[in-house]
Length: 180
Image 1 (tube, one colour):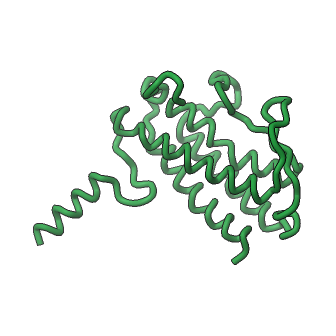
Image 2 (spheres, helix red, strand yellow):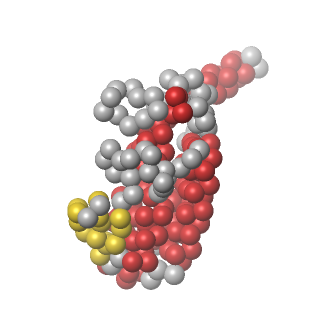
């Protein structure tokens, strides 16, 4: 398995988990806009930050540049902000499918050596290989999905099983095991 193949399989698996994480959120904006601490992103800001990552990577492959969509304290009233968690989940699925198709046509030399300029607005903030930016965006998605996972119980939503059993599911399994 090549590095690109491993990335593709990792992205495919994790994009499905991200879509599930988004679908596990309530549609109640008062809950979605809750913050643990004022400087932390709210669940809704996290969704709108990581949701566009596949779209951004598609641009990196096609254009050799990547414009970060929702960085820093971005405008939550902008027209590109998702309307619902379901819209965000569908966008993740659609853009991830496009990304996986683009990766199939990307040769190993481009994957390893093509330099991608990364922009935050008009400011170029870095440049790195396509391979590195893809892995960085996957790791960023996983990191922020972990932040998102810390909100479910706090906002009164059942903790979804994203990477394995939740505490409640483990407790149920232990209780069933003890009763046999």
